[in-house]
Length: 496
Image 1 (cartoon, one colour):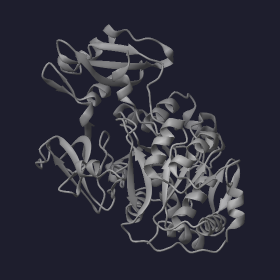
Image 2 (cartoon, rainbow, N blue to C red):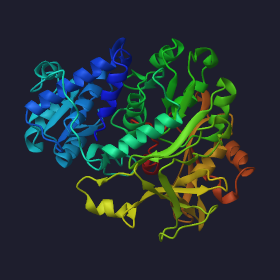
Image 3 (cartoon, helix red, strand yellow):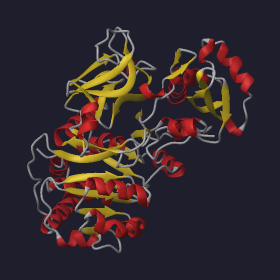
C-alpha cells in the first residue's frame, strides 16, 4: 500500500474537480497528481530510495502538498517540520532526522545553507537553493505510479513535544495515516462536494492527517491559508467557499466576539475543534448563536483519532470527546498499569492501527510510551461514563497537588469560563512553601478590561471546593500557544 494512492484514486475518479484553492489559484485533482508525479520522478532521478528521509519546512501552500505526495509516491518518508522553527531548533531536528533533501521556504535558505554540510543535506530545494520546485517539476515526468510499501512502513515523521520540552519524531505508517483519514471522512460524512478550510499548519497532525489527508481521501477541496488570518478566514466563509471549518478553541472564542457572526457563515455545515480542550460554555454559546454543533474528537500525534463525539448529532454530549472509533481500543489504567472500571479516573491507553510505530531513533522513549509494548500511554487522564462516552479530566502532568489535595486545572477553567468577563483562561500549579503547590489562574478578560481577583474568587467559591479556588490571579493580554494552537502551560509555570 501507499498513502499517495488516495490522491491517485481521487485523480482517477474526479480529474477535473478542484483539489486545492491557494490564494485564488485552483488546482484540479488531475493537475495535482501530475505535479506530484513530476516531483516523484525528479527525486528518483536524483537517487532517492524508498525509506529515505525528505524534509519539508515551509508554510501551508499548494506546493507543500505537491511535494509531500511526490515524496510519498517514491516510497520515501516525509519529515514535516514547522516553518516557524529557529535556526537552532531546525538544526536539532535535521541532525536527528538526517534527510537527504529539504524542501523549504525562501526565508529558511540562509539557516539551511549553514546546516547543510553538517546535517548531510544533499539538495536544498527552495528559491535560491540548489534547486527550486519549478526546476524539479520541469525535470520530472507527469506519469508515475506510487510505489507499493508495506503497510507498517513509515510514511511520515511528525515532531511533537513542544509543550513538554525536547521534541520527539513520531513515526506514522502508511496504514496508520490511511486509517486516520478514513475515520475522519466517515465521521464527518465527507463527500467530494465539501470544501475544507485549512489554516492549521501542515506539519501538525491536525492539519496534515485530519484535515489535508482526510479531504484528499474524500475527494473534497482544500481552501488553503498559510496561517491564521481572521479577515481572510471570514472572507472565504462568507463567500460560500467553505463547508467545513476547523479551528482551535481560541479561534472560536474570537469569532464569538463578532456581533454579526450569524450572517457571515455562508454554506458552512460543519465545525470542528482540536489541539486543546474546548470549554463547555464555548460549545453552548456557539450552538445557540449559529445552530451548528462544534464537533470534537480525541487523539494525539502518536495516535489519532481515538474517539469522536458526533456521528449522530442528536447524540452529541457536551463536555465529552465522544465514543471510541471502530477498530480502536481504549483502556483506563492507574499509574501502575492496572485496568480501571467504568467511572474511575486514570490514564487513557490506546491500541489500534491509528497508533504510531514509535519514536524515531529513540527506543527508550518508545518503550516508555507503551504498556506491554502495544498499549500507548496518552499522558491524559480520562473517565468513561456508563454509555461509553469518554471525558478528558486533564493532562497527567498538569495535575496540581495543593495541601495534599488533587486539583485538575480543567475543572477550574470550566468554572472560570462561566464568568461573563473571562474570555480565555488557564490554570497551573506553582511551587509554594506552605501548600507544596498553589493554584494560579491566568485570565484574558473580555474587551481588555480587568476583573478584580476578589470578584473571581467569590464567583468560584460558589462553584468549587475551597482548595480548588485559585490563590493567585494574573491578568494577561494573551496566553502562550504553539503554532498549532496548543496552550503552553510550561511557559505559564515559569512566568515570573
